[in-house]
Image (cartoon, rainbow, N blue to C red; front, side, top):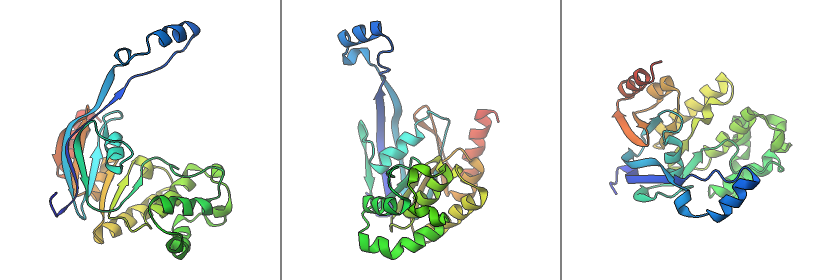
Length: 247
């Protein structure tokens, strides 16, 4: 692995088996008899994808829904494994891939801070030292001691983002969830990402917001149909994507 790279993706492919399951009694009988791999074809979501992310670089991944970009992020995080190819990572990863992932709905925000931090490998003592910092950034105040099942999507985002940026990660992976929440908090998040980048953190952002990608990213990768259609200067790649989409 190149010493200047935080991530190296080499010839990665990923497929998922299509299996809708039975929808009626007749289907259940047929489904039981026909429960074999040959009846459940695979759909290739990523096809021979290769790219790298340098240390301290911000990469944007854009593309239509279903293009494979979120699957790529889950592969980078280790949630999924590639069918073929390899992913090499140099450094500790923190990720915001699904809103509220890792949060237990019947526990309070405070309890979930400690649980999420431990998932990211942060010990209890360190979390205690950073707790006020996490709470202040999240701006949820007294709601920290309410069960998170009562949180709005914006509150989920605030707390999840606050935890993710306080685990001393070398690599931060972010899905479209930054679109959730008010304008002021989104700006606050983007300012924090700039600060993390300035301190050498590598960031990979999956987004539909091409203007944000142009502003924030050093490089943009456009995935179409599970393959990289274009990669390079954010302005150029985003403009190609917008033209392709006809918007």
